[in-house]
Amino acid sequence: MKITKAEFVTSAVAPDHYPIHELPEVALAGRSNVGKSSFINKICQRKALARTSSKPGKTQTLNFFNINDEIMFVDVPGYGYAKVSKTEREKWGVMMEQYLTSQSALRGVVLLVDIRHEPSGDDVTMYNFLKHYEIPVIVVATKLDKIKKAQRQKHEAAVKRKLQFESTDRFVAFSAETAEGKDEAWKAIYDLLTQ
Ligand code: GTP
Ligand code: MG
Image (cartoon, rainbow, N blue to C red; front, side, top):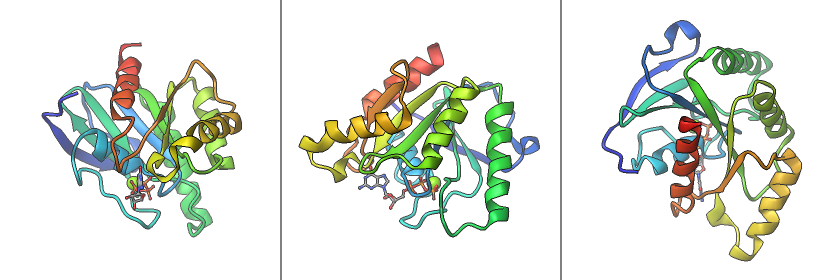
């Protein structure tokens, strides 16, 4: 897909700050530091559209990005960062639940997991939460560049097993370093929009 426009629209922490627009929304989800913001940048061919960091907890608000006047990507803060206080965790929970359950424009969620590791309990909870609310999900197993080619199948199988991945969902192995999986990710996103 040719990206002719990729623009930050606004940040929000509560529904009264969500932008008013006509575009279908696709949100990111996943642990802190898994690579959600990097995923947006890579598939939009922009270096720093979404802010990234080697330290977890970089993204703190819902950040809306207009892509080609076709899709609104919503970058979100990650979960599972140990240093976050209980109050912060609760705030995060309220913000995410409000967003995921109140957004009529939301067409699906890209759930990122790290292909190197078995998904965490939080990853499983998030996958089940999305299933519960019947929100279409694309599982993107990222940091593919960090494992050997010969290990890919084994890791993919381990991710799917732990999530109890449903074969009707889409699975894409991806790397924000090499762009591997980029076209497949776009295809899966387009499929969500035309479902
Ligand atoms: P939060 O905003 O804290 O929730 O994190 P995030 O999920 O948005 O992660 P972010 O995109 O900021 O990336 C975290 C770190 O992982 C950065 O140092 C990235 O460069 C690195 N990273 C992300 N994707 C990949 C990848 O596919 N391969 C490699 N090698 N590094 C990656
Ligand atoms: Mg981020």
